[in-house]
Amino acid sequence: MKILLPVDGSAYTKRMLAWLTTNGEWLTGQHEFTVLTVVPAIPPHAAAMFPADQLKSYYDDTAEAVFKPIRKFTAKHNLATNYVTKTGHAPDVIAKTAEKGKHDLIIMGSHGHGNLMNLVMGSVTNQVLARCKTPVLLVR
Image (cartoon, rainbow, N blue to C red; front, top):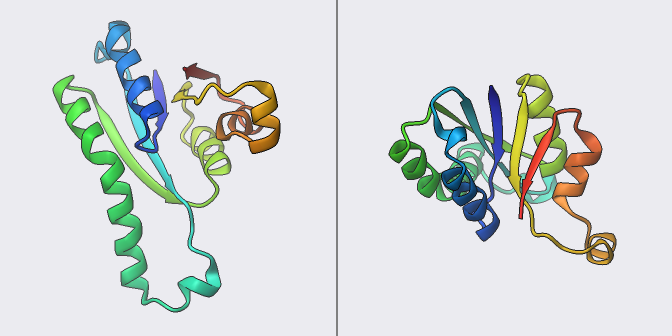
């Protein structure tokens, strides 16, 4: 099964990884994992003030800070894992990546806000659910 793991380095990412550990059937080696982090794009008018290599370095460094503990986790559990960094609006990028990569499942951590809080603040999780045809397993 091809599984997409959107991560942001937050406590919710750690909770999702802990859930995978406690549900060992996901860590059997039968699955192919893609770990995705989406770095918000710097607005074009601000990005124009920096050389392209400096912007690339910023995006790469930001992603690697998120990936570093996850690399340890996947190595410890000997998981076949691809790491992907993209820039943009996280919900759109997650949905497009899942569809384009023909992933069978998305597993992601969720803040677990109530409906009122989501209405006021919005939610990456809710937006992924609205945009995505791929099944989503939420870990709260």
